[in-house]
View 1 (cartoon, rainbow, N blue to C red):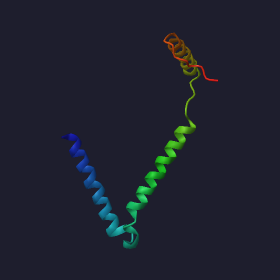
View 2 (view 1 turned 45 degrees about the horizontal axis):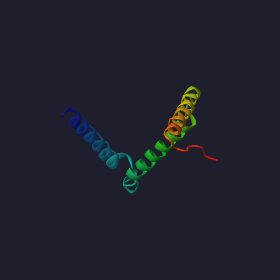
View 3 (view 1 turned 90 degrees about the vertical axis):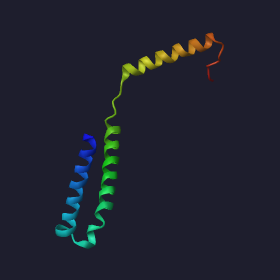
View 4 (view 1 turned 60 degrees about the vertical axis):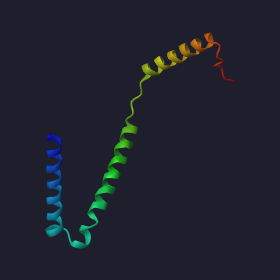
Length: 88
């Protein structure tokens, strides 16, 4: 129930802010484009955050060693079961 109340309060606050913008600050000709600008800005922000996350993607050399060890173990297990895992 508390979460619904928070969402309703947020909706009322955004609506009030929107009405104030429409009535006082922004000219009417631009006011109807504000939601489009907001959505485009949100998309750009999301793409920027994905790009920053990819640029700062951590490398884990110890995990790479463990992964190679797991691959060798899996190949040995499959060879014992009669599966050909060598590729040439």
